[in-house]
Length: 142
Image (cartoon, rainbow, N blue to C red; front, side):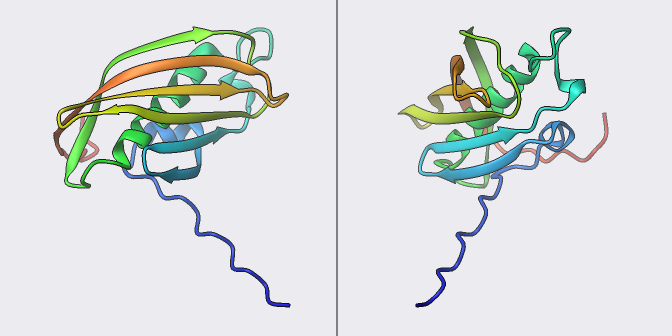
């Protein structure tokens, strides 16, 4: 019996300081699909101890934009144009967001996402549009 090698971890298609700051973990990224995970920490929560809606919005944008980036040449950038979220239930504990590109164009792409709480309950559905742009590199200056 031979051991199967573990799959290589997914790699972010762009370095976004906010993703690092919030603690996002990229579980999967391929062919217009992504999965991003966020372990709950008290500073990411609301007054009821649930994941704050702003934290949910951030992971939704990360998952959808990375799904878009998986289909775009690395020499190009991606910018969020519109984003709509529908909160369906409180998100508790570790959350997982699955992003999917639903329409691909040369200059604009459309994506959807779902966020699940630690209990597996669907907490949020979202959709967004993304503009494909020439890439600019953040140099750490305001």
